Image (tube, rainbow, N blue to C red; front, side, top):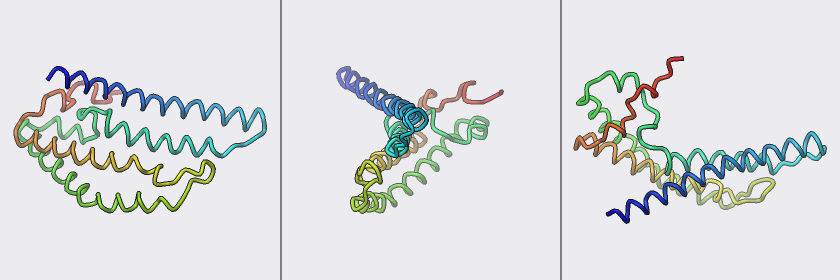
Length: 173
């Protein structure tokens, strides 16, 4: 079991590094865009395209593989104010509802991503199916995470760390 835990930690670190790489590449390309446009007077379009694609990927990839469940967006004020038994009901309802919607729409998402093979991006000529390919792992990860959340509500096995109930969850500024 310890072996699997170490493998999981390595995969998590790689996912963290990939997200950081995407953010870093966005910054570097943005700086390149400024240099080319304002200092060299050579506007380039591929930089805007890369930043847009990298932003899409970093958002969907990090939600699917990096962000802990406790950091997901929810109506924290209501969730924190109700007793644990009501939170469990919220978890079951929200988890099953979201999983059902995402399961129902998965074939359409797959069809859309596959269909986009016929189009390419304007500057880098990347097939749009590659651009949107990250949506399928994101879609599957949402289903998996929501089913785990519902199961945690049914069985009562969600850990307090999964809930993210700590003072930092509120913005008092």
